[in-house]
Length: 354
Figure (cartoon, rainbow, N blue to C red):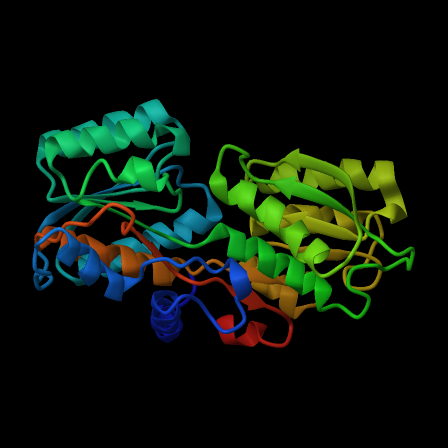
């Protein structure tokens, strides 16, 4: 895991920016969302004063959709470190990418009498069931990483979502391509020909990253051509296989490889190198998450760039929101999401994140 202390300042800055509506270069994709300061307004909307956060010491149950996801490993380690540092007793469960198993874990936590839950749902489509369960039990709950709709969340006023605006990460991927000398048009034929390696298409992050990475190009007046788009389920081996097959089929036609996350991008890089292609010379490659392995490849010139999905910043915000809920805060409908900004990572600034 990246050094927690080294990213603490960046996390604080990102949270501050999110509360103000986004960073200076986030453009129109940054949502008009609520940050930590808006939580007070949300609580006041319900007629309740915002209480002081408790000093810790409670019991917290954490559910992660699966432990072998590289990004969520960073996230859960940060969560556990922050919670335990505040004196909480923490249990973290692996959902093994099985929603039924995660539902059982949530019910077990409730039976055990935990004080609060932090849940990374296996499936976004399970949000209604999860929310109904925690509401019936009266357990303050923070959902992370996979965002329900505002309507779904409005069913329970002791519920908050903490995450990032996936549309922003997609836009930043597109901007990384626009920032290249030829704006992605390596062969000079007047269009950018790309392949898209998606995460789980049921996940809203995968949907928005896929849409907005390409939208950034078309909004800038760049003509695009999709050669292929396939689901890689956030998995490195699947990313490698998809990219290898596409390189074999389309060859030099491929100018850009968009990957919804870094793990798939690392897999794609292996296939690009095996095919004798050179990133930033005859092909571009971008990912999302700013995993350590991806940062190394960006620094070495083997990835065009990535987008920091600030796990530490999100973990920090999740704990802050959890403590407000434990202190008795409630949230008005439409004011239950807290976003942390993404950050573009390029060879010029990658050292700041290593």
